[in-house]
Every structure is written in structure tokens, then in C-alpha cells.
Length: 383
Image (cartoon, rainbow, N blue to C red; front, side, top):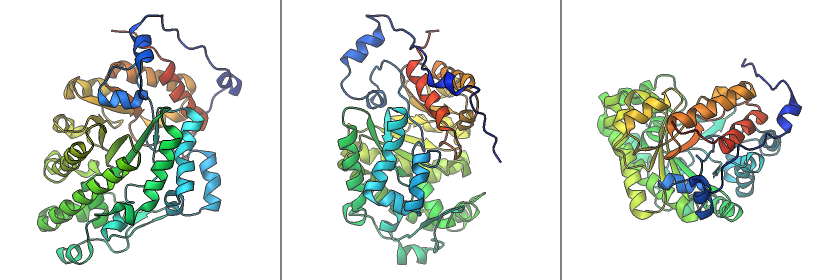
């Protein structure tokens, strides 16, 4: 059982600290006055910003009491993520509570799969489950289909994003997301969460043509699904390779990178003003293989050192991340120190502050508020 470390004084938290002053006429104040679009969108585009923007993966969901209160009324995850008014409400909860610089759609990376002929459910305590996984070329040919009309297969998605865009326009950045081809393919083969990804990795050797066919089909579907999100109101997209930790560098080059690249390149051709972020969880061992990818920004997990990652990728590559989510169980001073260290190591420009993975269940809300507060008030001292 995870132990939580709470503040020693609630009153100390509730009394806001005075912001660190920024002198008039500084670069930061001039950029702020000249800014038009929200800070996260500008940073992702590579524009100069007054401070690193901040949002958090899985910021909407189980750690928030308001979310847990909705679970009694809407007991299944798919209800909460596919009933438009409910998903909209949940997506907005962390922005309303913490004033994050981004609002991310409340959904799941597997949500496009039913439109591809692969049904799934999310079961309490077990996570996503695919009752009839894709294990052979016959399975693929008989069951997998292209998702060519997401407005028809996923009408709720357009409704959610349209509502969110109206709520957030000019105030914060609306983020859409989708699972990357490798991750969706691996889920579709394994049938659920797995420790070693054994079945999908055996397919790499025993039936690579089946895996290639599945990856090809899912890549095309992901492009259509993500493009629909952008047309519906998403201002930037995050591509999640959540099962990147199962790949060796050679496997990443063969089965993940080229398909993620196809998604990114096609989306940028269709929507050149929409930044794309790529996040491969557990990819520190092949970070250098990502530096030539077409994504506008790479999101880093918590296992890599930010300063080393910047040196490996080069400062021309914009990055997001990468504070260890478990720091949010620590005390206020440690949380603020972790935020400052990450910002200092990343540099003021070309960086979006985020966690190195999603917020964990049980994370104290007051500690998340401290994380966001420090990100907004910290003025980095130039080296």
C-alpha cells in the first residue's frame, strides 16, 4: 500500500505565496504582452514563451474526488468517456481545479479500436480487456477493418471536443490524443495488460507479416481518428506509445518508429498548424533514435535525466516532461524543488513541464496544485 506524505500544515498551503517578481521590460514580460494564443500552444510550436507551460498526463481521473463522485452514477469507464456531457465535465475538472495550461480529452487510447472491428472493455481492477484478440492472419483478414468515418463510429468524440473548445477558447490549450500503432497493435494481440508482451513479440519472429498488416491498417485508422479530433477542436495532439518499454532499440526501429512517423507526417500534412507530441513510455534506452522524428515535441518519461536527454537530443528538439509522478506523494518543499530542477535542466525555451508518466491513483489533490503553482511562479535563473 502506497504511503502518502501530506503537508504538515494545511494553513501553510492555503495561504498563497507571493509570486516571484518579474521586472518590467524583461523578455518574459514583453513575450507575455505580445502573446496571442495560449502559452502551451505557442511553446509546442517553438515560439518564445514567458515561462514553461504545465499540464499532466492523466490529469483528469481517479486522483480527483469530483471524478470519483461521478463513478457511482456512471460505473463504467466507457460510460464516463463516451457520454459527451460526462467526458466534457471530467476533462475540465483539473483545469478548473489547478488552472493547467492544457485540457486533455478524457478518453482512452483504445477508444478507436471498436471502429476498427476490435471490441474492448475496461474492467475494474483489470484495465482494458479484448475478449477476442488478433492472433493470426485469418483473425486480421476476417475481423479488422479500416476506421474511415470516425464521425459515424465515434460521434461522441466530435461532440466532446467541440464543447471543450467552446469552454476553453483563448484560455488554455485543448489537447487530443491517440495510441500509437505499435501500442494499439500490441494491445489487440495480447488482449490486455501484460508483463512481457510475449505474444506480440513472438509474432515479430513467427508471423511478422501478420504484425505488419495489423500495424499498417491501424496506422491508417489512427490518422483518420486523430484528424477527426483536430477537425472537432483539438489544438494539439499527443501520440502515446505506452508500450514502448517492451521494445529493444532494434524493435523500436522496425515495429514502432516507422508507423508512428507515418501518423505524424500525414497529420502534419493535413493540419500543419497543429503540433504533435510523441511519447514512448520506457524509451530512455533508445532516446537517440527519436531525435530525427517528425513530431514537434518529444515527451520524456521519468527514467531519463532531463539534462542528459537534452544533450542527447540536442536543444533543437523540443521536449516535455519529466518529473517522477511519485514526487506528488512527497512534501511541498520536495515537490517545488523537483519542479525547479526539471525546469532548470530543460532550459526555459522548448520545454513543457509535465510528469514522466500519468498521475497515480491516490495522489493528493493539494500536492498537484503545488506542482502547477510552482511551475507558474518559478522564474529560472540563467546559468
